[in-house]
Length: 95
Image (cartoon, rainbow, N blue to C red; front, side):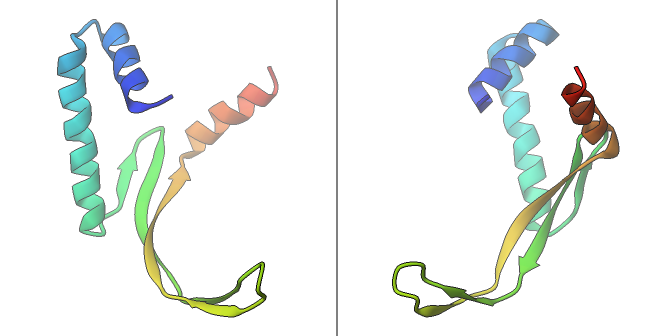
C-alpha cells in the first residue's frame, strides 16, 4: 500500500474528502519527520516507536573484488513495533 492508497482508504473510512485527509496526512508525516530530525523519539500508541540511531563505522567486503571497504558511520531511522501491534500480526498466523 502506498501513500495515495492509504489516503483513499482513510477518506472512505472517515467519510471525509480525499483532499482534506491528504492535507492531514502530509502534516502528520511532516511533524513526525521534524521530530526525528531533532533526534526525538516518536511513539505512536498501538503502532510502534520510531527513533534515530547512529550506525557505527564498519569494514565491509566487496562481494566481487573481495576488497575491504570502510563504511562510514551514519544515522538511520529504527522502527520498533508495539506489543499490541506484534500481537495482532502474530494472531494473523493462527487464522
